Length: 213
Image (cartoon, rainbow, N blue to C red; front, side, top):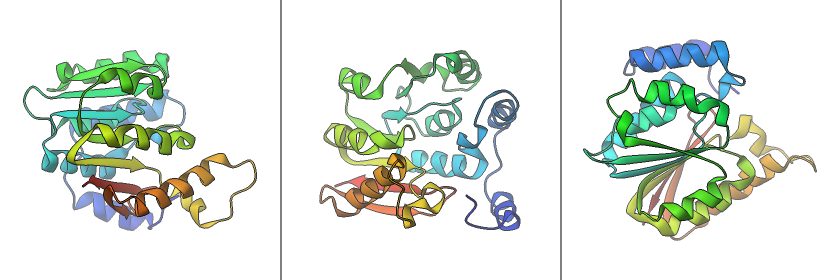
């Protein structure tokens, strides 16, 4: 859902940092060749992710849900020298596309791809995280969150995408709509969890920015 007009979106993009050329190419290729290109973070949200990462200066980033690698490249822009970004996805068919663009960026050697269920992979990483981006299956958002919070460094940031879910979080979910119910419960948990402070931003389809206290 677009929460603001296309004209205002274009104004916002035109008065924000330009989309880097590599990411613009990945944006185009995703829309031309990959199913569900609306899953891509895109220019404006990508610049938001990049800026948050640059402000946080993380040594270790975890991304849950790689898709074609756009958001990973944005987040990697803020990595400390020698830092690492772990990105997890279940779609093997996208790994070559991801790696092709990762290797064209200055941060390619810092991005590690993981293939498989995130709930199985995360405990094996056994590293403290400074920045986490959750953008995968909505029904497991709360499971991902509860798993990573104890693994975060103090002051670490958790970003959660699609938390407005096209405005469906305001509606009574249908009996078979597990994703909307999961996101309603997730947003409530973040807003009331004493371990964190959080703000929900109406960026694109909703972005929760959560800081571990």
